[in-house]
Amino acid sequence: MAVSSEADPSPALTEYFADLDDPRRENSTDYPLHEIIILTICAVICGADGFTSIANFGEAKKEWLRQFLELENGIPSHDTIGRFFGLLDPEAFEARFSRWVREACEHVDGEVVAIDGKTLRRSYDRESSKAALHMVSAWASENGAALGQVKTEEKSNEITAIPELLEVLDVAGCIVTVDAMGCQKAITEAITEQGADYVLALKDNQGELRADTEAIFDRIREGKGEPQHAHKSVTGGHDRVETRRCWAVDVEGKGLVDLEGWHDLSAVCMVEYERFEEGKTTTERRYYVSSLGPDAETLLRATRRHWHIENRMHWVLDVAFQEDQSRIRAGHAAQNMATVRRLALSLLEQDDSLSVGVKNKRLRAGWDQDYLRTVLQNA
Image (cartoon, rainbow, N blue to C red):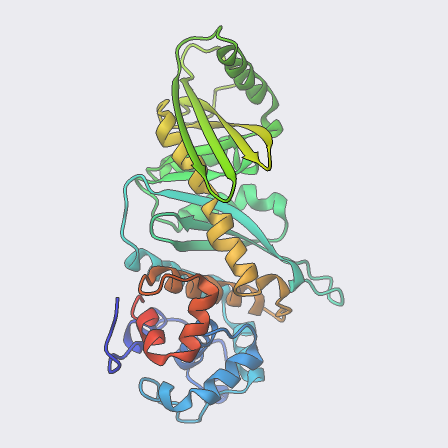
């Protein structure tokens, strides 16, 4: 979506932070809260990955920024920016981010919302025994946007973090996908209470259910089982062919153990991934439980789109935003900057005026102020 060079990108962004409490002392607010936040969002979109580069971006773009920011006291120093984000309440900041997502994204029935965790590897601090920050995020596959995220101290705490994340999301009518760690009875309850369906990976953490499910599909593959729903897709390129087959069955009457407590569980499925490359074929089978009926085509689509959170979010954050290399760690700064990166990524993903990757969109935004305005208008 193109916009004129005269368009002012600031009002919509400013609106989301208007009621955000300023954590600084009253006599230490030479730089308004909204100006620091908007400066930071603009800078991160344009390639800044730390507080020094954010301040340098501000100095280089000062006159352009003054078209929609007063900047009465100029551009804050990198120390000022860092202290501000170290003090800012990350939950309150994240709440404003989630509000933007709800208003900016179009609701799509059946959209796959993938949930997964990611560790910011260099956010640990040995001196203070501070563990690396681990974020559990949700990614909307159709909208191409991060819907929200919550912090958890350790990866094992994803089990409790996922219901907390679901509470602040609007996933009604969507299909929520989670990897095997999230295959828990309480999580099926949390998802269905939000009016969503689920497709959860099934591994050895649910040993008996996994074993029974695997046995069902072993019989089907041997031709001994009942008729099943099946779907196949084939993709390829660069001397590689990938074939995905999905078989799905209704759980009713299948004798699966321990179904009690699995809210609305109605189908199990097996997805077989066959990859042919360089004259060799490899095969992998994965198993899932779902509240959807035994619709193999829908289940296969959901399991494929779950990987969007890895390929379009986590990988991009590491490669295009250098998130894993970030040494920001003081106070709440690491968590707040993680939110800024996800906001910047979502804004860049929303833009379809350039057919290039996020890394090149960031470069273009830094070079071309009209394109930066275009990206900001998605807010």
